Length: 125
Image 1 (cartoon, helix red, strand yellow):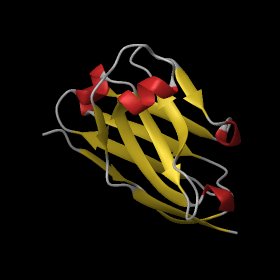
Image 2 (tube, helix red, strand yellow):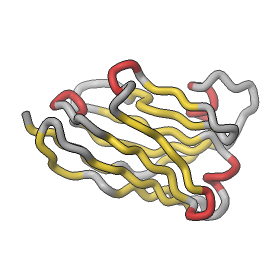
Image 3 (tube, rainbow, N blue to C red):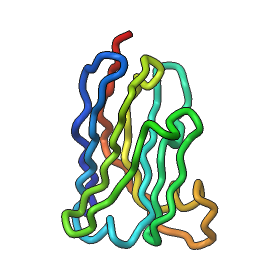
Image 4 (cartoon, helix red, strand yellow):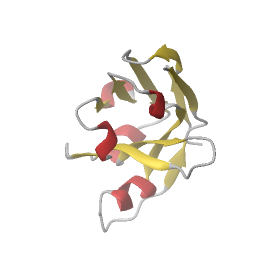
């Protein structure tokens, strides 16, 4: 059974940084589009950053220049480096492997879809 486990969330002051990690079981990282999503209270889950196996990336406009997604297939881990954090970045952040991110990146190929349990990021203003 595939598992995605996020970590690295926490409380940080505005302007600070955090690095989220998503560790996957098996060889999921190397074979799937990977994405980070977030959901703030009362809002819909949104794509934050996505990465294809070919190296392309996609970011929501609000995090461009501040967040960076990266992957280490040897460690079965995807990272989200978050700099210059703002209060509006406060949310639960989720890791996704597969189809949701594939569709977000406009890929025709279909994948199975896997989600982590989420990690809370709180940015104090």
